[in-house]
Image (cartoon, rainbow, N blue to C red):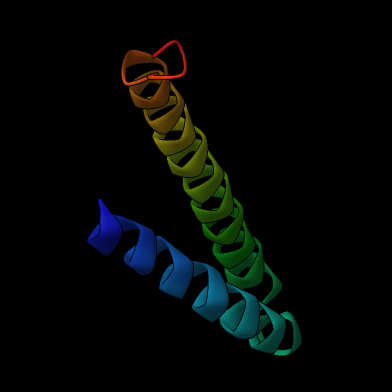
Amino acid sequence: MEKLKQLLLFIAIAGQLVGLLMLFINIKVAIVVYIVYALSIFMIFYLLLKERKKERREDEENDYRDY
């Protein structure tokens, strides 16, 4: 999971830079790069939310406040 998040983060950073460069060279390629960039950002948020829900569920299962 960590490798996937790192890969998506790298794609997001590279997508921003390459997309900006492609705006001056080829608009159609820039649009595709920005779409991939947006998808990677949404995927990162999805993975972070999924991980947070898993942590919250584990915290509820291991709740020892009533002792």
